[in-house]
Amino acid sequence: MKDIQEILQQKESECARVQREIEALRVVIPLLEADSQPEVEGRKQPEHSVEAASKAEGTGTDGPTFSAVTQSESSFWKRRR
Image (cartoon, rainbow, N blue to C red):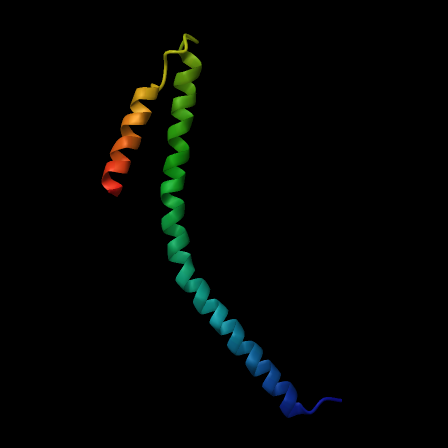
């Protein structure tokens, strides 16, 4: 049989570990809540674009052009310099 002091010491160390984990979770929860709010808004926007795309005719002219993509990339690289 284990010594009662040894068991008490183990339980206290486990309790301290759990308290540290709880504190870490309390720090992370607001960060996760902040991340989840824009994500929900981001999910709603593509649904509207999917509906619009299904209503549009399949001419191949809908959406951004390649020139628009390259312009945004070039401005990105200008800022990096």
